[in-house]
Length: 223
Image 1: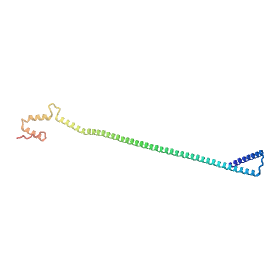
Image 2: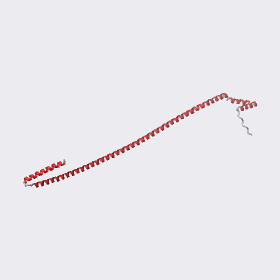
Image 3: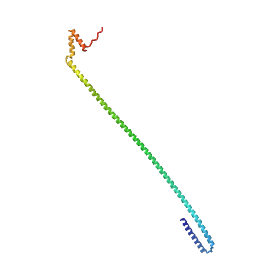
């Protein structure tokens, strides 16, 4: 495409130069030989070729500059993309680190709550065990007190009955309610009245009382 444009440009320029030479020739009306025409055409061709080379060199320089600029732009865009990727990676790494920290903190909090729950459960179990033990001890004490009371009642009832029976028999045999005293007291008083009159009877009564352990032996008199 560029070469075709150059050819059209050079053709138009060449035709313009030819028309200009013809116009000058018509005006001046000098006689130009074929050799001069050939030389001029040769010069024109050389000028066209040099202009074409210069234009091509300029176009090549422009293309090289455009390619260099494009490469620089691409390099800058690549650098920006690389920076964006690096920033994205850094942000992702930071978010991952934050997520890991949050997970670690959450795990620690859960472990602490679990430890607290276990402690509360152990405390509740201990309190339940202590309360159960306290209830057992209270029931045991109440049972022991009840057993002691029942045992005392059951153990003392026969004694009470026996003492009541003995007291009743003593009262009946000794006639304690009598205003003159018991029968034993009255018997001793009667024997004391009889003893001075009958020494033998008194001696027999003493021996009988000694045999039945009703009279204590008198302590031997000291010399």
